Image 1 (cartoon, rainbow over the protein chains, first blue to last red):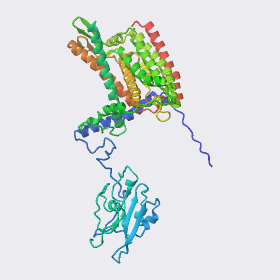
Image 2: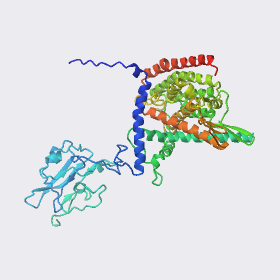
Image 3: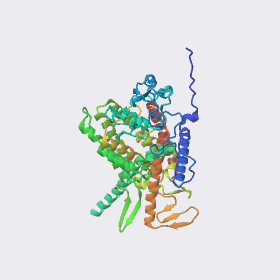
Image 4: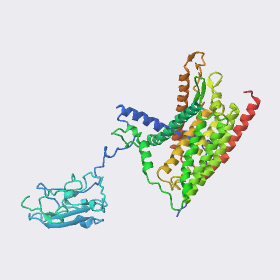
Length: 200
Length: 361
């Protein structure tokens, strides 16, 4: 391995005096202080709004703009009849490195569709947000574009999303009533099958 | 007798009301100033009825939090000393303010009231004694906590105090020699004269070197960045590592009080205390010859306002320094104290003495 000699520069007398260096440091902080104080004052009377006085985003009130490809909480895309696009192929469950997806497929009455998810759960407590499930899906049935980043819960169970929340990102916990018509298993019905294809 | 006592109590009330409130505001100032320096906004969430007032309620919220938090005494700690230490810190920081003059004399009927809690002939020595005693709180806290890191913090604080107290003391000898008194009120009065009629003869004018030494050593005395080795947030967490609740709050308060005390001292010794340039007891005497008479109360209030403004400006300057400079390494700190400030202050005292011996002042 080659040896790299780092030469430490000797301080000049001007730098060793220390006081001039303090003054130059103070110049930096004071310049920031005066500029930002002036801008804050100007903002408070509604002037110079285009010049930012701070880099802060006041988070809950003022969400930060996210990149287009930013991976946020998952959602299941929906067909026109309200059933999930997912065909229960298990590719996402298989590719998932964290093994946070649980799918129970069931037979779809439409012979062109073959299967659909009776259960589709994602445990966000384990999910690593890698986005492989989205990449691997042949049906564009799962996406990570809800923009939800403030996933928080007070227990591990509450971190588990079931098919309601995945199909409707507007739903937030606790979900109390089940509006899905097609036959599925969910936590509200206690894991039992609920709904029928006749209704949809 | 009773009237004297009342007057003293009122004076003490004014001083402590001002000082303690300024200390509370210091937490606000520290947060906001650092935020503005660093392009942030700073604490602004505490609100009363939806009013946020730029985060001014945060000191209040802090106080409530400190008082309601659990107070823990570690199992192995010396209970008495552990409890006593924060009180020592705050007590010595507070009593030192007794000798600080915050205004000229008020003549009320046949009484002459000096705006100073205690008129002590050796006020300067008294203030320095209290400043030095303040380190007892710190070393006791470090010792009584039965925690290696706390003890390290306490030891560092002691070494730092010893090293910088000396430079601090010698730096002001020049000022004492020039004004010929240790009574702070008289010292401020002595700064009311004019140099050539234009420049007020403040301590900074006659003792600029002493001022810089004093400022540096005083910053070290307050145990705040860049001299916050006793605390050493990133490595030893300091002498109050085993403190919680309001006891921790009192150490924090003592820190701020010492900052204010040092600002008061710098104002009193080097920036003319309550002196307003060209203001004499009977009004303004401008160097171009014109005069503007003011009433006695205006004169006194102008003095108090001048003192307060100078102190607050010094506090802001200390805060600015604190958010500008990185912390010293321990050996650098000792080197600066003993090989830098100490010889400079001794030289300054010698030069001042010899100049005073030759020049009739």
